[in-house]
Image 1 (cartoon, rainbow, N blue to C red):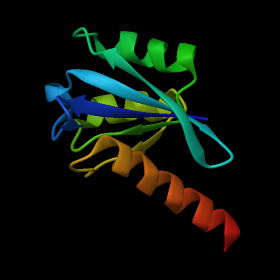
Image 2 (image 1 turned 30 degrees about the vertical axis):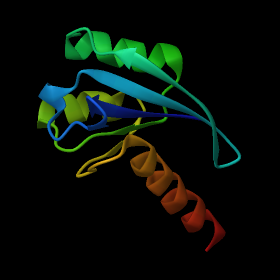
Image 3 (image 1 turned 90 degrees about the horizontal axis):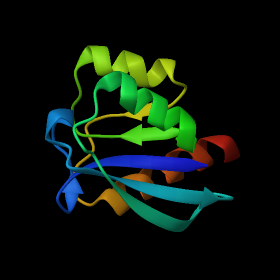
Length: 105
């Protein structure tokens, strides 16, 4: 599983348009086992969707996002988590905790 967090510097991007890079977390059995930073490079939404499909992103985390981009990401098959704040790693861990706790219930 892979989780992408839209970042603005060292924090979750408060707005998708402020994304400067993506932290990509590799997850095995609910545990983050590695990460990579991918520069945003001002990709159009269509290019971002293709990138998400190509590298197998299962979830995408951001602060706020416009509706058209949200629809495109969901159509690409990624869970979309909004209203995230502060530390990208904590945002990813919170998402993982929520989905794996839900499975256990």
